[in-house]
Image (tube, rainbow, N blue to C red; front, side, top):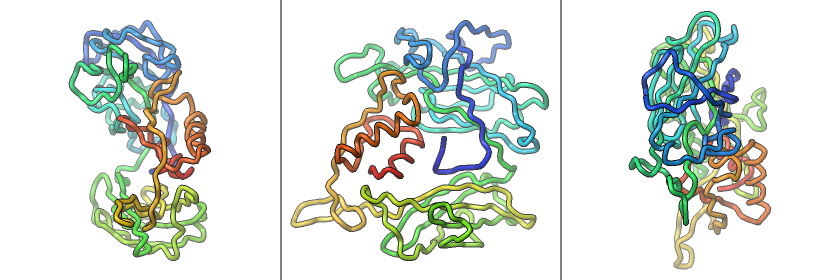
Length: 350
């Protein structure tokens, strides 16, 4: 679900969940009953959700309650467990085995909670998600969604609309990192952060081509945590729409006893800037003018609305844009899933 930060172990929680509407938000009800089923991660208004709930006004006033159960494999023992949501529109409260593990506002951004303390030792884990989405009646950013669609405004999207998944991590683990390419100095600037600080921890960064970490092109053994650090990329292959070359990078978090955490990612060596060419302002890619041509992509699907029916459908869409001779796509008042941006990166779309 997140190609920009990959760990070996993770579990997909997408599938058929229990569903009900309620007047109570953010209050766990042990005796909550469920009369309907929904296919996550499709918004409840979509056909693919199995609900195709078109009572837009009621949906903006009610709490949407989702429930599923999952079992943890033995390999997750003695590890922290992170529960990830690609996106939930608009506000949600999340309960694991009856305990509230967190709340989130924002229809388009991914978020996660550490649910370790709420897990039970034996048996299935219960997950409930309460969602409220006032759409255009609440004042929050809502894109093209309105409860009375018409003209240039479209169908509301309510509830879970991107992948729900979990991953096991160590008590100390990599939290995030930022990779900034600098083609002029043939380097990347990397800043890596962890969930907690320890003087014993350090990191190793390994850059490879085509996944060949046995013969890396760059290695930094004593990689400082939380500090901008430069990694030299000799004779870099530049990314462009015609040649969308991507480098692989692996981070290993270590202490005196060995490797604690490993994540993999990728980057393209490219520079985006602007300049004056013959008296005209131009977009520049890798210090050369590039004429941007592409569609206004509003990201609606006929069957899934905000959510594409499959990864293959998403790739088909982007390949069609490429086949029409375009080199960019303008995403309109919507933030897509991490996989959409990954496919743009690897297929050659700005």
